[in-house]
Length: 338
Image (tube, rainbow, N blue to C red; front, top):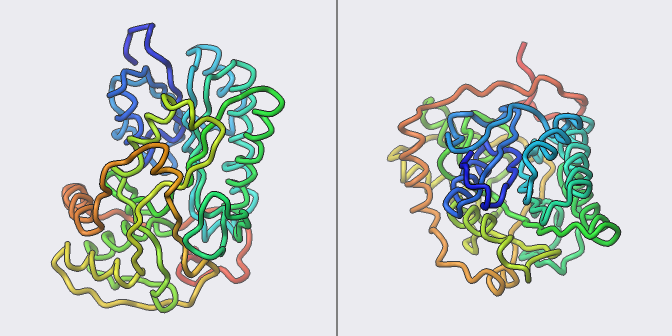
């Protein structure tokens, strides 16, 4: 961690992961002293710059969380740690709420007790469920899976913490973010990474349903810099913002774009349709008005950047989640192979 005691101290949970590590890079550019808390369940310590203070541990460890706030005198919290397998969350309900809700409450409690200046939370457009797209911040949240429920519960808890204790917060609702450092070995989330990993391994691309589900796939450069700088914009405090690309593509179109970038023509294996919103993308007018973003990265350019990193690091194994709580209706492709 940098030594200038006049610079703000920021805690980044999940800072060894995909979005978190890019956020750490942006905070260092802004001369923050950065503390990273990560259990490495999905990230890698190699993603964490040496200038940071890295702590191996979980947000579910209340004693550890309190110890960090006491020791480092945290000014800002950027909370990204989560198990973000939205579809799988139906089948790991207890695990989901323990990690995505109770762990978040540990951080909120500590932020109140140690008088953090602002708590920045990466929620998700999963809070909107299957509401009509494009969804804006006035759309009534109605999550349709335990992951979205947990995210929305944290949002509500932050509102309460501000009302009763004065804890400032900013909520971002990103969606379908992709780019370098993404864990392409995770078969439960991040479809761009899943497709690239399957191509590298010579496998068919697996698509749930007909592939006409539509999403706004968002490059990491259109997310991380703005989250990092958000604390400097007091007008953003205690508000929620959708953040992401305005380009909408189907899963089939994503598969075609990845095939083009990787110069291959893989077959597509259509699996049974899973429980998910068919069309999920959001309106970003409020974000654009507040943060004045630059032109976003196009899908094809973003995938090219991601593939350069993926090609350098190679394919990854895809282990099954080891603690499935409910087997009923679990997609066959997600079942643990014995």
